[in-house]
Structure formats: C-alpha cells, structure tokens
Image 1 (spheres, rainbow, N blue to C red):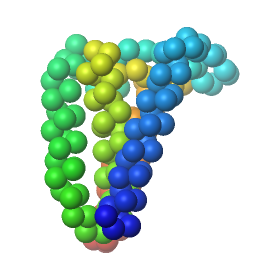
Image 2 (image 1 turned 60 degrees about the horizontal axis):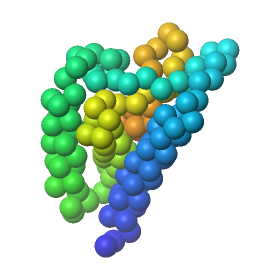
Image 3 (image 1 turned 180 degrees about the horizontal axis):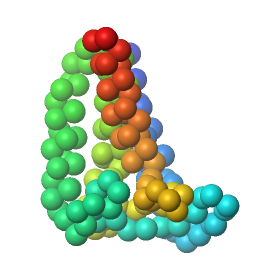
Image 4 (image 1 turned 90 degrees about the vertical axis):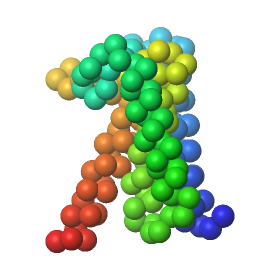
Length: 142
C-alpha cells in the first residue's frame, strides 16, 4: 500500500475513532456541561444535517452506506493526495454516523452552541471535507 493510500485510510480511521470515542464518552459518562456559549450534552438525531427529515433513520443509513461504498470504490486507486484528504474526512465522518444509525437507531450529537443545531465530530469532518474539496476544485478551476 503506497503512502497516499496509507494516509487516506489513516485519516479516515482517525476521524472514525475520534468520533466514536467522543460519542461513547458523552453517552457513557452522561456528560452535561453548560459553558457560557457552549453546551455539551447527548442528543439523539434520527434526521440529517440540522435535524432535517427526522425519523428516516433507515433511509439515511442506506444513503450513508452508498456514499461510503462509492468513496471506497473511487479511492481504490487514489489519484492525488490533495483530493484524498477531503474524501478521507468525508469517509470517516460518514462511517461514524452510519455506525450510530445501525447500532443506536440514530446519530449522537453533543456539541450545542444554542443558536446552531447540535452536531458531533463526524459532522464536523464531513463539513470540513466537503468545504475543502469545493475550495480546492474552485482554486484549480479559477
């Protein structure tokens, strides 16, 4: 396995492990912290981003699985390191949220600013990965 593939899988696995460890900790230790601008508390989300389309967990699990399979298929031969970084973040995030959907019936969100819908590490990785890919492709085609 070349350096590019190893880096890709390492980033995806790191996101997945960090995501699952934080969610497990929040659920297990019943963390409920209320700071001035940030609250940490577990919320079960059966929808997608921003809590939209609730109670469609099976549908979103299937969509997530399809995305994960497509990324794995596409990156069996990673073409460039630049895109691999963004896709690895997306893969790790999608896999973390899929595991929650399959094992818990919904995604555990826990980072809550009050004025923004609650989210988790996987959501952050997905968002950063998508924004990164969009920016890099915009920059390349500019």
